[in-house]
Amino acid sequence: MMKNIIIVIVGLAIMLASALTALGAITKTRAPEIGTLLLPLNGFASEKLASNNLRAMIIANQAQFPETISPDLAKLAKQAFLAEPITPDAIAVFAFDSDDRIKRKLMNQAFALSRRQQLVSGWMIADSGDRNDVPAVLDHYDTMLRTTTSANAAIILLLAKAIENDEFVEPFADLLSEKPRWAVQFWTTVVATPEVLENAARLRELIYTAGETDHLSTDALLISALVRDKQFETGRKLYQTLNEPEKPTPGSENSSFEHEPRYPPFDWMLYSTGQYGAVITDGALRLNATPNSGGLFARKLVLMPARIIEIEVKTRDIPDDAFVDISLTCAETVDNAPRPASIPVRGKLTKQKISNVQSGCGFYWLDINARATDRGGGLDVSFDSVSLQFD
Image (cartoon, rainbow, N blue to C red):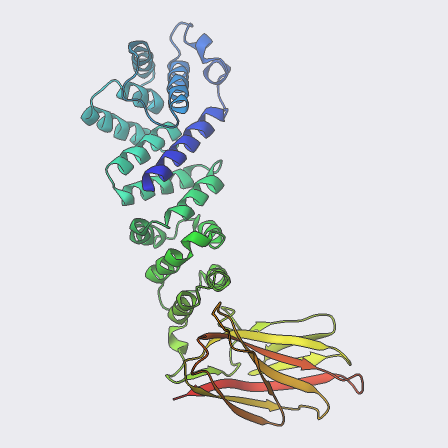
């Protein structure tokens, strides 16, 4: 898989480089053939012509670098270098007229002259891949992303797909720990790539440091993506890592509404329309609705073990004629899924026991639903806490 990724990225880099028109003398960029006929010899024009010829060979060879080049092409590249000793592409071209040891040495020298040459960077990536040097591959990707913007979206998409390979996870952690400028774009791409989500969660855990706040938005996207893909346990494990100081005590799932939700759906998801809505404020969940309106106000994903579970709800200000309930619906795809459970909420304290012993379902959607009657001033209800207790 890594080899395929490398071939694609090299081909992309070479094709993009061939398509770009650099600023500079017209004979160097638009008519290098003419530039090579002028005296004194234009080294930059010769470099351009030599590199264009090599790129054409690579593209024709399905993004594979040639083993050798023609004597005429090698001669042209050497003439360019002699005329202009700071021409990295010229060095890269005549490197193909050498054995592997000299070729690698010349490519490193060309890379030292300029890190913006896609021809050189492409070869460095391919060579690192041939040697199975994953950290070096990623380091060169990073260099390309730092020195050009023309291909960033395509390169990042390939990088995101690369972490499906377990070999890439730890080297990626080392690279991302340095906080490259493209990190947010990378994580945003990852969450839209379902096949890499499990390794993405592992990668995020590797680079997590207590107290950090840089990744709040992308962490929330990653957790939501894991849940959409029904990787509930992986999502929960990541959520617990990110909420280390706030882990629930064993034998309970608590929600005291003391904090704003950060990582739905393991934190509350709140819903609002023009007629009703939910907010968390002053340590409580507040539900408001106009007369004859209502529906789903809040939802979170909870883990329910195969035990007898007691649900406890503390509320205030529930009108006698209002409809308020807690419902539990299996979130997993299981055979003979249990029927949803509905628990009416009345008064300041509601307690009810339910059995999850033989359901075959572990993760449930816990929903708070409410509706105001068509009489009076609507609905205004506060929840102080919702908890699940089990032995």
